[in-house]
Length: 285
Image 1: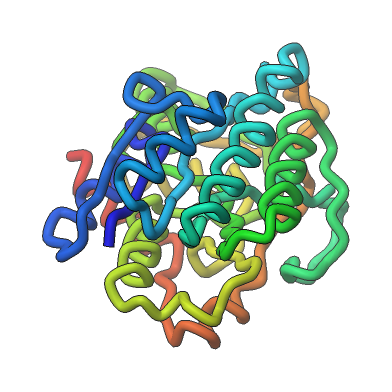
Image 2: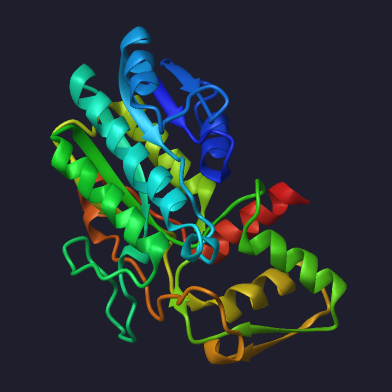
């Protein structure tokens, strides 16, 4: 099978390269220089020319705050480009693996993990455009797996982990919000799940929407505290409220994803976030 990966230079795309290194299939790793997914003709031509059987869309506009000032650009990448991929997948009868986000939920304070069928209510342009992308996939009629994830980190690119490693090595004290609750996700764990599905071909007949993050629950403060501790840094990390650290876009207060569906259908075990964090730090160091 021929597989197209978009956004291949990002966190998840980079991990997919590693996980698929010994695959028996042919993987085409592309970023904007190789394939502009905002160009529907280019997408259709690529999928037809290479006889693509599966598409893994890792491309996204992920700057949550900047999206408030650039909603059209965010929509172009998170919504319209996704529609082009879905339409092309429908034409060539490929399955689209589309990576989405916990930001499609409003994240009002609660204590029950969010299920796939729970009501979506994004707070800002980033979540709104990602939800529009999901809806475009479903409306296209293509075979698909929409996989919502959260708090993604890896040794690649810009992410919370790498920012905290830098700040806790430079500062004596650091304040991090403790009233936003979720679960970190090691990009390598999600990449491994996707590659295993493609290798096993067990996604056929199980199309739909799924949640994937690591196990466990924490705040950004808890995450930062563990990063500081595991890295052996001496920074004093303290909690603060979100209103003490205002941002351009509002963040979900609670966006823990319920992973029961994906675990039951694909018979997988998901690592706890602290275990995966330790693995990622070993990779970095």
